[in-house]
Length: 439
Image 1: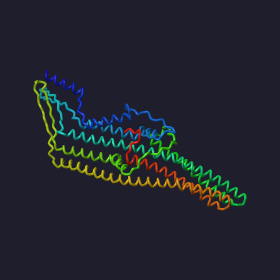
Image 2 (image 1 turned 90 degrees about the horizontal axis):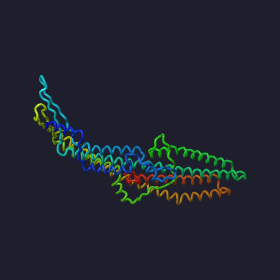
Image 3 (image 1 turned 30 degrees about the vertical axis):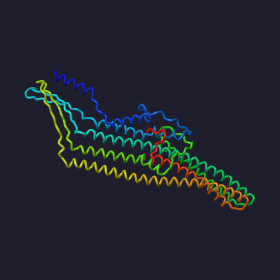
């Protein structure tokens, strides 16, 4: 009866299931996941997204993209799955039910039993540390996908905004060219100019009309980029085109920003996570020389209470195999450290280049806005008056008009480039998290 009572207790334990003890890293990872889920997927569902209009703030567009982008969701689910693997790795192997019988002419002995494998001391903790390091690596990938989504959104956002500026500048110039054609006709009627001036004005208008058509046609691909950055599929409605300009705030204080980049850059954090993973793998390799154990018990059904204890132990005798595992793990760590150093050098170079590009485009923008465009506008006004007075020919007038148009378009290009550089410095290099990000 005692034997059957023991098996009844065992059966109830197996049905009810057992629960292991969570590691410190596992608890921290689950706490982190709960905090992120509260902003990214509360109650496991996508939160209510902002309603986008043409006048929505850039923050609304960013929040919509970060919460709706499938790429971000995929990285999030990968991270959640990696947290569950910590539990798997730190848990004991499942026990095994065994059954043995002796049969001669008749059944003479029946021995059910239970067998449990016990990994060597420290092996489960070492495996859990590897899983924890992998989980942190997955979180870094999730964070990186959020920043990449924000950067893609800002690129499309600014390109669409400044496309409207280019169209506006060209339409204003087209209207000016129509006025110049009217002046050329008037000059021709009084014998001060030939029809060649009229044709030149018409040629300029035709070229500019085609340029405006090309710009309008480019709106489709740019809108598709914005739609993709927002995580909207083919069958979903196109997003509104933003018309509210907001610059990327960033304090370019040199060393302070570089320090922030070394602390938060997503590529650098990914390399640091690789180093931690390699260190944890070394710990697992060092435990490979420790034997594993197994214990069990069988009970004789026909002759109770007669028990057969069992025990076993693995023999890690292949020393070259153990040494190779450790050497491979150490080589992996050295490679990860080398990649980290390479990324640190690359980050320093990228920061220097982007900082220079920012200063360069800022100087160019100031030159265009403060000097070149006002002077080109004044030059055109003087040329118009001189042409009407017969003091300059139409070629000089058209040249003044082209100069003004070229400077205005350069100014729009410089503003676009400046905002994109600011976004790259903020998100891709410094790793600064935008407001409303689920991190």
